Image (tube, rainbow over all chains, first blue to last red; front, top):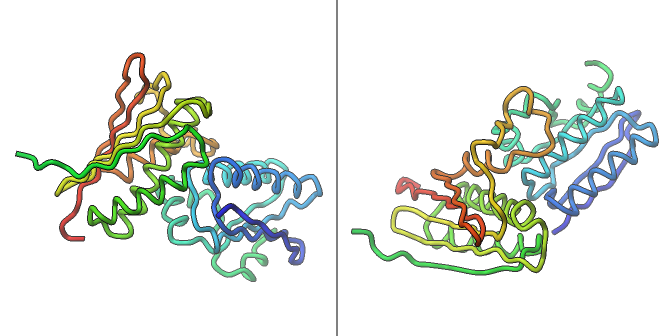
Length: 116
Length: 143
C-alpha cells in the first residue's frame, strides 16, 4: 500500500493526514512535494497526522526531518500528531522524539501553534 | 555440533518494487523461526534497510543488477545474508546519526537501525563480486 495524504485547514493550521507507507521512493517524494507546496502557498503551520501510517523506514524518518527543517527554516512550525507505537519507537531510538513537538490530541495540537 | 539449518534463498532484480515481496518473505521466515510480533517487525525493518542499501547504494539503482538474499533458520537464531554487486562501504566511516551534529541529517539512519534491531551485524567485501552483510537475531526462548 502506497502513501496517501489529504490536506485540510483547521484555523490557521494545515493538517496533513497521512496513511500507508512512508518509505524510500514514492512515499518520501510525495511528502516532500506536499510540504514544499504548502510552504509555497505560505502555509507555515503544519500538523502531520501519522495515525494511519502502516510502515515507515529510515528514509521516511529522514523525510519527516527534512519537512521539519524546511518549515522551521521559513519561520514556521511543524508538529506531529498521533504516532503509532512503531513510529513512536523509531523516533525514540533515533533520538528524534525530543526534536519534534508530538501530540495525541488534535484540538490541543492546533491550539499549541504559535504558543511555543 | 550445530544442526543443519533450514534455508530459504532467493535472487531478486535490484528494484525497490521487490521490497514488499521481501517483507512478506521475512514475516513468513521469522514466524517459522518462532519469533514474536515485535522481533518479527525488527527483523523486517533490518532486512528492508539492508535491501535499500543493496539496491540504492550498492547496486546504484541499476535494475540489471541483482540482490541475493539467504535466510538460515537455526534452533537458536536466524542468520540473514544480503549480497549486492556494488563496491562496498567502510562501516567505520558511517557517522553516528544520533550525535548532535547529525541529528537533523536527512539520511544515514539505516545501519544504525539494523544494529539496534539485530544481535549481530557484519559487512564483508567480496572482491570482484560485491558486498555481503550478515545479520543475526537470536531466538529468545522466553518469547
